[in-house]
Image 1: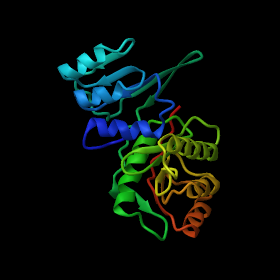
Image 2: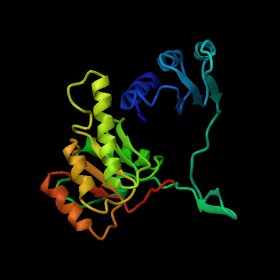
Image 3: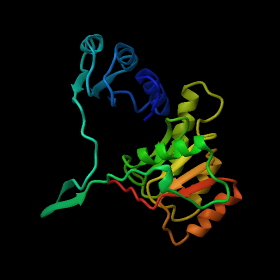
Length: 243
């Protein structure tokens, strides 16, 4: 996931995060597609593209691609309120309210000696927003408004942290870069770090700032590990945990 001044720039930044998984994947945009974005997306095999709308030239570009489906959604409702999500379970359904939490800079609590820089804070909030939509245990490395490594669906948080860093290294090699994009990145965790090992692994990968809910009985150990390494860390008090 990425944000940028143009759709094609955002797509390029998002693709750089994981060009392997992008093959045969789904691309979603939150604004109408133009020809430049359509051409960029069409450079690799893509099965589905979804967006609020697309201009005539973009539609023609996608129409020429075999087995690509363009879904035009129209205006999308902003998530919020107390909508219920239903999931089937044996003998019935599980009903839970939608995770509509939005964390802003004013909502976080600084817990380390060093505070995030303005750029780090912007990336921290971006990464935490992405983490809400990643299957738990979720770890998201982000830099300059784009994800650079994502670890998802693991049984332990340390594994997600390591997998995200490993995928970031592979993506950097594919892009011909000399170092991983996790160097100088920030990290978001969808739930607290139960031990300091996940934070230490993120620091070893080059992360400089962390955002997490907090609330572990070992928070003090995790904070101390961050201070020892000169990291900035903020707590949100909001837990995202998606299954």
